[in-house]
Length: 585
Image (cartoon, rainbow, N blue to C red):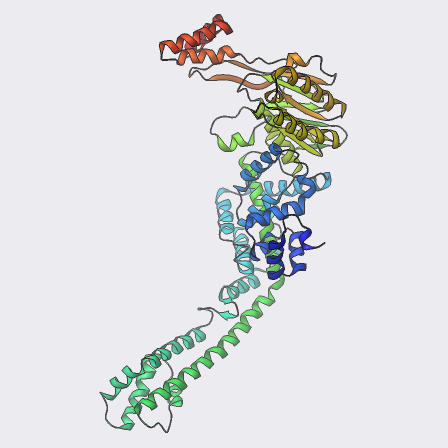
């Protein structure tokens, strides 16, 4: 495969990668999902992520059949990446895509669950130590040294299970020596602090250079204090040795025997001395570098193991922290039937963005065997559900939650439900309500949602308020057709609508569910039971909304207008709602 054949690698990107890495190494980096190498070569992290996501999960990306499905996928990655303990771990999270191969899904899930179990066993102090070790790790800029130091910190923390398996197999003594060596080795030069003798020679060399740059001042100082050639020579000898710290014998060896005058004598002495010191520094640096490089080479196997181990541990620890934070649980995968069923499911976006209590819901379509609470158990066998009910009743949120569960499960990750039963699908067709009323939107919507339904072997349909894009009569006919087509295609799906009565009769394997508003709370906020009631048409209950508008109206004229609406929707119901709210208050 040629470099330019990868998605996202245009002429400019190819030129950068080929120049910095060479074509074969660039291809190897993409095939290995090595974002670090691509970033080091000059690509932005975002571009590297997009290229790798397509390269490693192209088929998985095809699961995301609509823009709204892709938005849910990106939201999942945004939430999960908040728990990344390194930049490289965040990149790897953002490269995760849904999978279609069940064995690959289970392999990933097993590894993630092992990391979750290991993370849960750590006490808070150890968790902080581990996170701190990763926070100082920079796999891109730090390279081998950063990996070695992080591996040593993890070893000191005493972690060895799950994501940390392999830490105890490292030779920590050799790794520590290599880390110290790498700390002072850089671009062929040896840094300060690596060797006392080298540091002393460098300091002497710098001092000699400074004297050479200011030799006129030194000459005037010496000549003002002495008389005669011999006394001048001895005074220069003592002064240079004192100012540079150089052994007096080395200074004497640098002195010329036949200088014509004092200035020439001093200049020749300093030139010879600095040349001698420069050579001594180079020789000592070569010797020290060889020793340090030897320590690194001796530990090469452990360093390479540490690089891979730290990157993998950071990735799986990040996913474990995400799973523990949101109490995610492993889904159960089924192969012999089509289903998506959840018990006590929570919407991940609401959990991430809101401090309010999120009401768990029970829901299921297809043939499921989840153990639900008896009062809220959805019937098994219905391939399609038509979901109806109150405005702001959580219907769209339920669709989004089901989409999140399906995508997380196919990404090989635990899901936001106490129990979930999932069958693998080829595409997820999630379509939110878009409040545009024109023929162009209707056509584009149909082009978006119908081909995946007819072309894929196992599509999942999650369609919200289809009637919002055309007139109610036509919408009911089209929606009935979509429900029928979904059943005929042996697909499963949920369709949200306010037109349930107009869809009758539904196919045998389709049912109608309803969400109900229960009134207003003391703050005149709509009180909704977000748990759908199965086999029941939900009601929009506009009297609750009108009741709140009547209660909130300050202007007399405005209030009179809302009271007219109250009479239209049922004045008795409005008054009863207001009375109940006041009584509760």
